[in-house]
Image 1 (cartoon, rainbow, N blue to C red):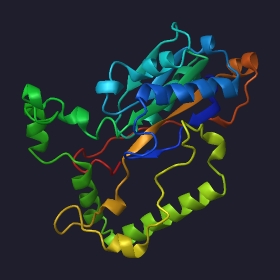
Image 2: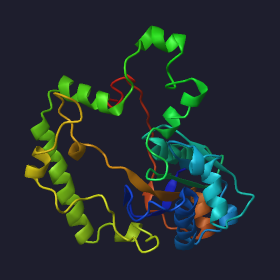
Image 3: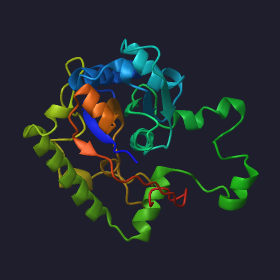
Length: 282
């Protein structure tokens, strides 16, 4: 079996909802990191054998195989194929898995993996709700097999997160301490320039917009819970984000032929499912 090396990694800054990247077409965000990835690595774009991107809510400007749309919008060779995958929150990670598997198996020598999503432009769960005009309230309702196994219980990250907090007895205060520490660490890393090398600024946006310098434990404690009697608040939820990222995965032969420099080696891949109602516990 071959080896799979990551020889390049580029991302946009992560934009906040209605922030600096909100108006950027997803194809242009993806194209931006793809062009920069090819420029930084020096690999011949025509030698890339596949482009694998993760994306959730593949409707509207993210429909029609956005991986290939990004590649073509970047002005890169038409003969290179692309495919978009959806493993929900793990979609871009799975894109890397598939790229590495192709290289490890000897099927391909040079594969791009990454992901793109503009959640300001395509609202969260837009694809989940797209069936309503067709008479389908959710992707699960109407399935006899699903109903027999899971009934009509709500499939929601909010509900799942509340269940996790209750099951493992995680208090709101504990979560707020963790969230506040996360903000402070992210801000410190930004100030220290730790992310500068991996970011390709986009139209004047050069820094992640998510970390909040103005937050405090007191502000977090003052927020209302999302559900009556619940523990979760907006301060404990992932933000709505806009951005794109791309990696180049290469075999030893591609490393030699293209003069590439390995930055990491993919040596293990795994994926696991769990209760889809709790959904975040795998």
